[in-house]
Length: 159
Image (cartoon, rainbow, N blue to C red):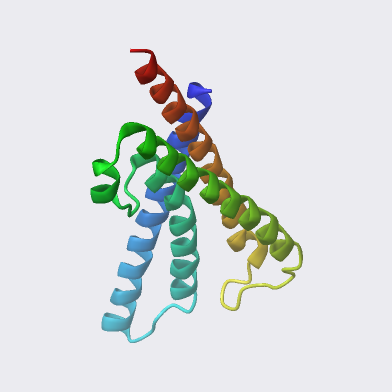
């Protein structure tokens, strides 16, 4: 399981870095085209928007893995260990439920997307396919976190 998660992490990071790099380059190109040639490219802003969508939904899993999402750590750190464990489990399980619903509803949404983008003429299904992908990545990391928390809790109780 660890090898699969490590492989998934590498792919996720490469895609995020690639999207950020492409977005930076094309936006810089757009600035140059507007400033020097007074002729902006019609597709750049649309592609930047779609890359931002991909970065956001892939970044959800990245944030979970790094523990960088907003949390109430001040309150959580004052709790006894068993209450902290229960609190974390409730948060993880409720988040899992939300992301399972997100996967289901986003797949239903994508199925009916028979539209092409305005400037680039790419299928919108391609753009929005990152929603169930990002949600699935989140679920994998969250399940791994639940397993880790449970192992830590039962290891601490034995000592």
